[in-house]
Image 1 (cartoon, one colour):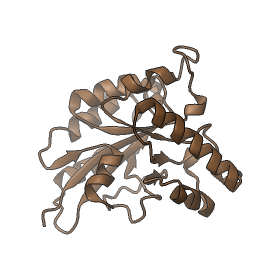
Image 2 (cartoon, one colour):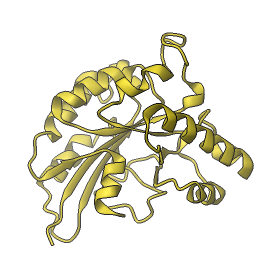
Image 3 (cartoon, helix red, strand yellow):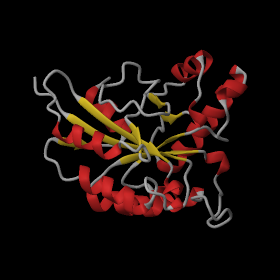
Image 4 (cartoon, one colour):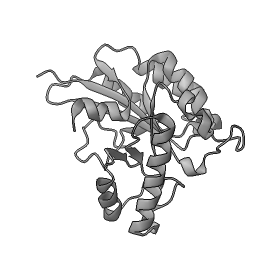
Length: 225
């Protein structure tokens, strides 16, 4: 069996900065997933200047995956089971209607979850869900509802870990590099959070014949984890 390497991106909140980020991603052939809080997004363009509007979603994210991030970005640890179910069902329903496919991927708001959340997500057929933090590893998820990303883009070790991934030989299993963050962070223009920094990441990882560039859902569909 020939094992593969996968690279995917997961970015949250639907900021207007996603537009610039996607331009860079598309230029380098990088694919990813954008986790949206549809209950916080403006129904009409430019109503809330820092948010993508609902009407813009199909065009902005047409080459990528739209996934859920909680209808109103709640802390699920502070909600009842009924409130969790209501929130995620609303987000799935509205986003699915807008993009024309089932939005059954997720990133936990604030990175928090509990057993009740997992039970509700299982019942609602959520295919995968991402936590936060940096594992700095390339292991495949053992539980699709508790994905530990490889790295946030601002991790000071990001380029060392990317280089390790590029050089790695997947001899015993598939390998996954899972990058996450928020596009608005690039406007801070810090050493590890700037547009130049993000483009450097894309340039370094792109164009490798032995890496599969995919959305989060494509990764899970391909590997059948």
